[in-house]
Image 1 (cartoon, one colour):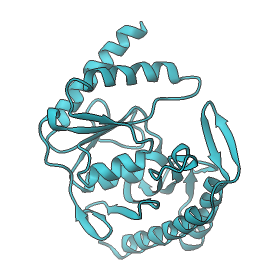
Image 2 (cartoon, one colour):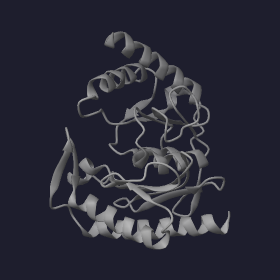
Image 3 (cartoon, helix red, strand yellow):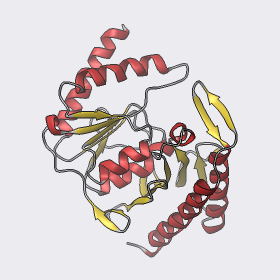
Image 4 (cartoon, one colour):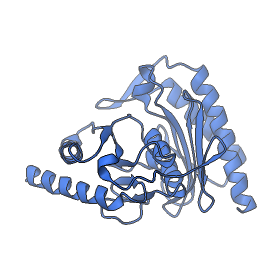
Length: 269
C-alpha cells in the first residue's frame, strides 16, 4: 500500500467518522422532493456539506461529487452518498449507509461504507483486501443458485421507471423459482457491503449511479466477488447495471438475468 493511498484511506475514514456523528445526532426535520418518490432531507444535505468541507481541506486537489449537490463527474474524484436509504432513514429503519469512494479513470480504487445505525463499517483499497470493523471479509462460497440469498435493488421511480420496472418484474419472476430467497433492503450500500461480507450471495441493481455503487463495488471486488455489468464485462462507473456475485455464482446469475431481459424486451415491444 503506498503512502499516498494510506493517507487517502485515513482521510476517508475521518470524513465518514464525522458523517456518522451528524447522522446519529441530526434527525431529519425537513424533507424536499427531488422527483417522483425521490426525496432528500436536511440531514442528507448537512452531511454532504460537512464531508465536502473536510475533504476539501484534507485533499484540495481532489474534487468531490455528491448525490445532493453534484460536482465533478470525470477524472479522479471523491464520490459521496451522504445517506443511502433515505426512505428507510425517514421511517426509522436502520438499513441506511454512508458511502464514500475514490474513483480514478472510471474505476473505484477505495471505498468506505458505514452502516451507522448498525454500527458497522466496511472498507477496501484496491489490491489490499476488504474489511469489516478491522477484520478481513470474503464473499460467500455458495455455488448453487438454489441455495443463494440474492438482494435486488429498488424498483425505479420517475418518468423512465416503466421500462426499468418491467425488467425488475421479469428478474423477480425468473429468480423466485430458482434462488433460495430474494431480498430488497432499499440501500445499495447495504446490499454490496453484505455481499462482500458473505451475508448475501448476489446483488442485482438495474442501474449504476456512482454515489450508490462505487464504494460497494470496490469493497465487494476486494472481498473476492465478481462485480460486472449485465454483459459480464468488468463494472465501471460507465456500466449500465451493477451485478455482484459470489465467485461461484456469476454464470448462473447472468444466465437468469439474460433470460429476464429477453422476456422484458418481448413485453416492451
